[in-house]
Image (cartoon, rainbow, N blue to C red; front, side):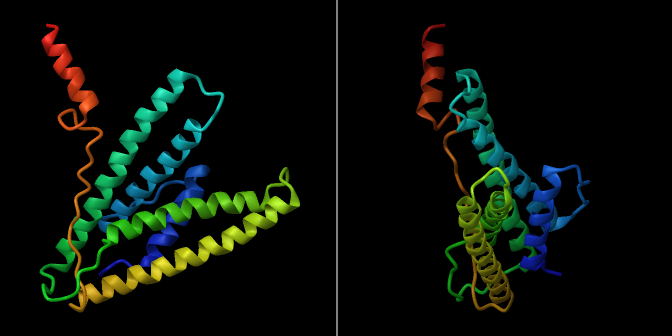
Length: 200
């Protein structure tokens, strides 16, 4: 049975709240397990990026955070690809004559994950007592926009999955092919390797 978008968005909302507290993590399988792991990568990435923006952070801390961000970004994108691979196996052979959808379901789930994080933190700001009334009002307005965006995107995801199931649309696996972590593709990294070899 194919997972519905509202099941994914509900998980993302509950896990965002749970990871900020001490709620136990539920056991999931299949696409939901991948979606939860992918959301966790985005959750961790969000908070590492907050640390990177701290103007008082020491250089060593910024370097540590940068390495953590690179690793989390790689995990985030790997899990997007794994979700798409899972869905392609679940659907089986697609209708090759159907129009191609430019964005994969995995990428849409990633966008829903980011929206869940934005919604959580915007809601916090909308009720923060130490903030001004104008600040809280502005964030209530932003919150309504974010919720509408999430609802629209969730509807689009359900529509895409339904159209693929009925042979009316198709999608491909788009590998991210990131270069920055690969010592054979990043010129800074392979330049260091070449320099090290020539000096030995």
